[in-house]
Length: 195
Ligand code: ZN
Image 1 (cartoon, rainbow, N blue to C red):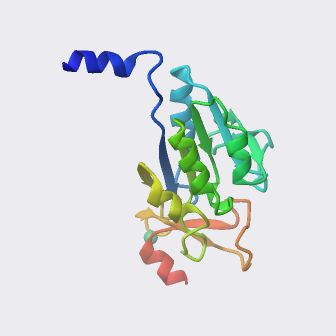
Image 2 (image 1 turned 120 degrees about the vertical axis):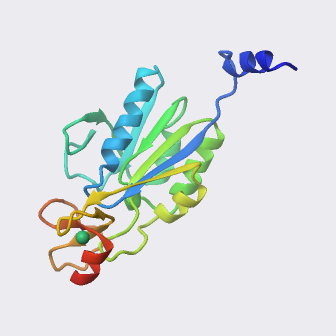
Image 3 (image 1 turned 180 degrees about the vertical axis):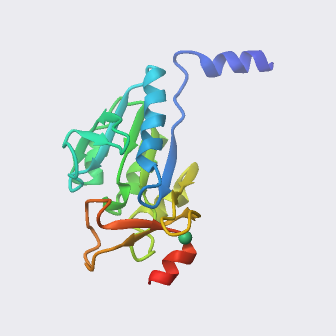
C-alpha cells in the first residue's frame, strides 16, 4: 500500500473516529477553564458536536453554562454523577468535563469508555486540594490520559509560577466553593511558609 492511499483512507468521511483523553490540571486561578473553553471552541469551529458537563454541586455561577473568569461562556449540563455523562454523550464528537475533581471515582472509567468509542474527551480540574493532596479522580485521570497539560497561576507573594491553592479561611470542609475571597495561588516556597 502506498502512503497516498493510506492518507486517503484516514480522511474519508466514513473513517472510524479515534478517541482520546486530554487532561488540563492545575491550581485555582491557573486558567484551566479558559484552556478547556479554547479547545472546545476550536472543535465547534471545526463543526464538531460538543457537549460539556460539570458536577451539579458546582453552582457558583449560572446552572446551564460554564463561566470562566474572562466571561467566555459555553452551554453546559450539570450532572449528578459520572454515569450520567455516559448516558448523555451518545453521538457527540467532543465531550468537555469541568471541575472534574468533584466527580466520583467512576469518572476515569467513563472517560476511557467514551474515548474507546471514538470520543475526544477533554477534562479540566484541580489536581490538588487546599492541603496539597491529590484531588478526587484527578490522579487516575492523569494516569490514563493520552495527554496532560499542567497549567499554573502566579504566586501572589513572589510572582513565581504557583501550583498550590492556599485556603485563607479556617474550614476543614474539602469541598468549599467560591473563589477569590477564600483562596490564593502560591508557589511551593511561599506555600510551605504559610502551612
Ligand atoms: Zn511564591
